[in-house]
Amino acid sequence: MAETGGSSLYSCRNCRNPLAYAEDLLSKTFKAKSGAAYMFYHAMNVVIGRREDKLLITGNFSIAPVYCSKCGVELGWKYIQAYERSQWYKEGNFILEKLKIIEEFA
Image (tube, rainbow, N blue to C red; front, side):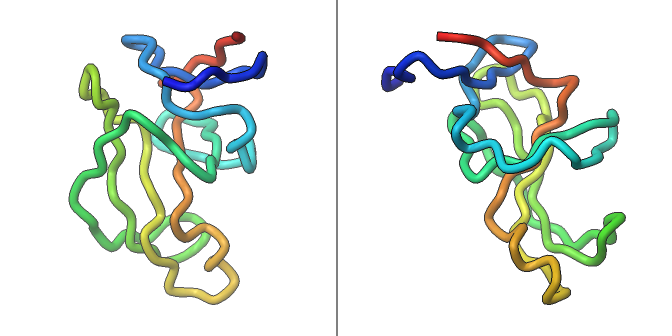
């Protein structure tokens, strides 16, 4: 893993596997199964599951579950496709559930 240059990163709460840099955090205002969730531009050390269409609070999406590559815990999902134009900005981004990640400082 590359040096973070003194900034924080987010890791799997279960096994401390690094998942995302703080610089890739886009929003802390999302909701998931367990409650609060964060949207990231990029995630690392994850496995992306099978794509499925799902109706979420903000509309219809094609999403894929995201799992920790080290311990296998489900962390959230990746937006594959948004079917409503107003939601296109979410495509390609990752949602990680707050209860399943921890912020660590370098």
